[in-house]
Length: 233
Image (cartoon, rainbow, N blue to C red; front, side, top):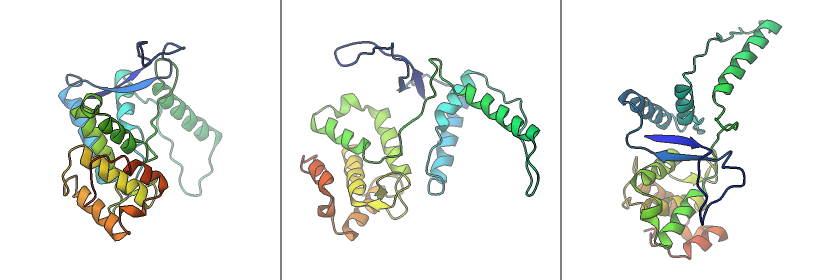
């Protein structure tokens, strides 16, 4: 199971910190982590998000929320406030809602004082990173099986219903991110017709129907010129 680690790190030739890694957050896979019930809760949350991904795009940081609230044994003791249509919002109800909110977000504060968050909106960060480590021959060492599974899950979850990917998770499909996502899936081992819900087939169809990969903008042509080895056919 994946766990979010806070303010951990060790200085070395490729990494150092001037503040003892305060504010650093990294996900680490631990095959022994979590009980059977906790793993089932994680899978149920993932599946619920996947089933509703076209209606609600942001993931809401649900998995690390679950981890933090579980580790801190959080129990919301302040009852929710209900305000009916046309009802006057009193100072008491506003104050109760505020205290409930503060209590919840206080439980999400990390041990070093910061609030974690993820930068999952742009869809043009991850695929080029995968292409880079593939080109330099480090794909297997940088992205073992568990990492590849999550990268593919991320790509599948943000594929639009028309088969393409937008510039960001809320965006309409573009040639740039659709081509990069397709290549990334192929590099990570998906076949021409592989992927969740025929992701590769649908992506290739979108690319062909919109003029082919040569219609990708200049930034994309730069990446494609590196000959990453996955062809759109």
